[in-house]
Length: 276
Image (cartoon, rainbow, N blue to C red; front, side):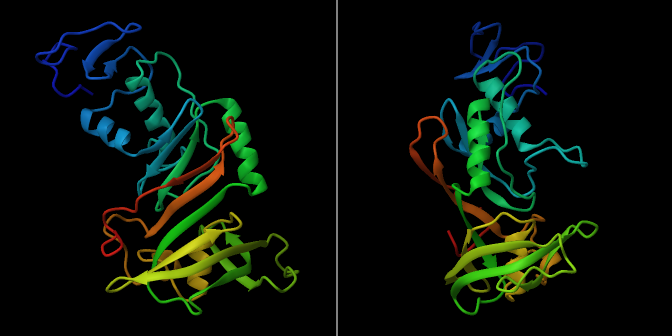
């Protein structure tokens, strides 16, 4: 893939001199074309990825994931967001060789929002521990097809996953003992509150207390409030982008190295009319 603004047969953009930096060739302000193992990003993709960085230091990279992007490789063979940002860092920093980016958590493909990546193995290990012990707090925004009743509360239920359908079901109230016929059931808990309405949809904030498969989608649908675009869980129609209107809006955690409290918020997609 060529670099925008370069002459055919040249690695130097029109009107700009090449400059060596660790065996690289300069192709724009703070941007170098390097001999490395990652694909070269177009200027438009490079600028888009740069604009979606919410926070970065030597240990962390926090970005705003788009609907349709995958967090890690799957059977589709599509490039995952981690590999895309590896290519971005390699190109931006003129870094030959491998770039380390670890994934301490994930968001489903049809979901957008704040995504936390680790730039060092130490940060990855510590963030992984933080996600497992529940010290990372995540807040989601969901555009729902119906008003929740009551407007605010806690949902607790026993959830089972049907792997053939790639779908989860609430099979019993969380106050009841685990159903004996479903030893694989897991307790799912979240807090929610209604925020406001658009012309046709209703914005609900969700504080996730456990991390189960499709938990928010399943529990809101069980409440009678399927998420806009989520055909699998009862929405009447799909979204034009093929995603669902569920957005990881805010994350708070302790920095894995500096031990300082961190809070990061991701703006909602521009398609959320009436919300932004």
